[in-house]
Amino acid sequence: MPRHDPYKACNFRVEIDGLTAAFSEVSGLESEVEVIETLDGGETSPRKLPGRRKYGNIVLKRGVTQDAQLWNWHKQVLDGNVQRRNGSVILLDEHGNDRVRWNFHDSWPCKYEGPTLNAQSNEVAIETLELAHEGIELV
View 1 (cartoon, rainbow, N blue to C red):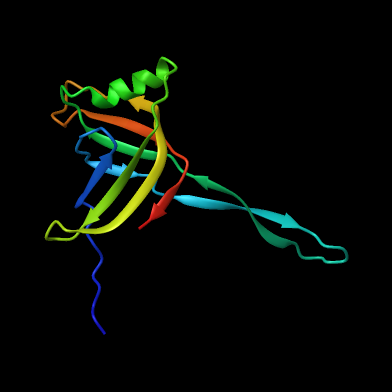
View 2: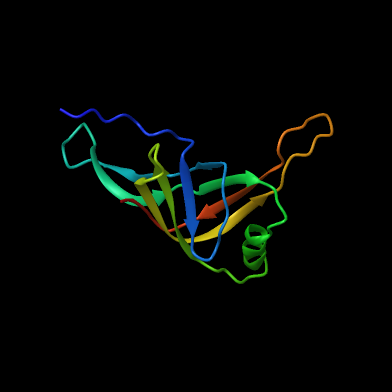
């Protein structure tokens, strides 16, 4: 039987329609189905049925640069002009080949967070963009 080692979490890229940006961290690749409990006549244990699908927001983090694409996209939402975009998070193998892909649909930036600045530190200034979306699939 062939051995399948897990891929490293540091080797990934993000693609979003019309945006080119490198990210240092991605989180929120999650989906959930609500559980609805019902009692049928005479039963003492509830039946558990699937309810609505829910998707967590995707959180993207990167070092701040002069590139304002992420802020501009968020600013459009603040101005009442929601521009939805599709995207993918792609996990790569050690040779840089695509191995696992999560596609997300109809996303828009619901939250932007600028960096925490501290004159006592020499860490990279990190900005965060949180994307609401309407579905995710593992391809």
